[in-house]
Length: 71
Image (cartoon, rainbow, N blue to C red):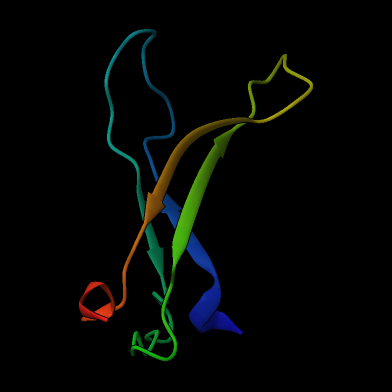
């Protein structure tokens, strides 16, 4: 379902040791509802080097539903 498909935006190429921005959008084609009952709890971002066998986790972001911390 398109509202749950993450879209990762990053430069096609970067130089070694150069900082760059990566953004992840969930629900780009069809808006995700993001209610207290139905929301994205976390996103993990992985990178797999061309010469590597395994992906490496580079980021984990956690989200609270609006008002969840008040419960």
